[in-house]
Amino acid sequence: MNHTKNINKFVVYILILFVVVFIVSKLNSKKLINKNCFQNKYSVIDESSLPDFFDYPAEYVFFDLDKLLPINFDNFPGDKYDRKQVEYIYKKEPNFAEHYIIASIPCGTGVQCYVIVDYLSGKLYYENNIQSVAKIDYRIDSKMIIVNPLDKVRESFGNDIDKIPDYIETEYYKWENNKLILIQKRKMTSMIIGE
Image (cartoon, rainbow, N blue to C red):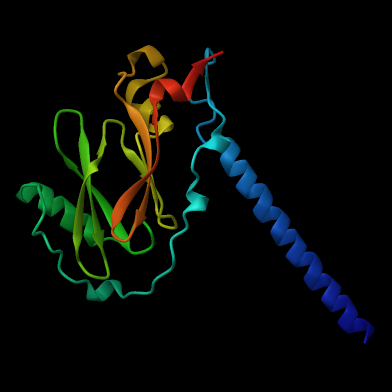
């Protein structure tokens, strides 16, 4: 009987430890987003007001990568080279929201457009609103996409905020019912303020 109580206490301690680790890791992830994004003369707005990947989790779906359906290119805006790029990425594992891939295709000087392909149906979605000058950010375990995230803007334009064009916005979308829904949009100048 005493042995059973000890085991139960141990299980409770382990569960408490897991909960504490989860909470601390979630808090740290919000603090570390875009940390020290620009030189010291600039600071980033409070990241806790920005959407987080954890807030838009993707549901796990089982599927067989060996039985991929062909991609339906009916509404594809790209040429044969773009098509080959999408097919190449499609043959890899999903990279977004558990069973989708996101592939980039050129759509103008210094601009990338993106398509989303569903592994379960082979359907291709072309979203005009996913156009970036500084890439996008997404995860396999989340339904959120960030267009022109701050860290990617820094990679593209360097540490000098004055080199960032005024028209660049960071946009947050969620993928829902096979379309992107805008969560939040912010001008880069409103996201970075002088100290």
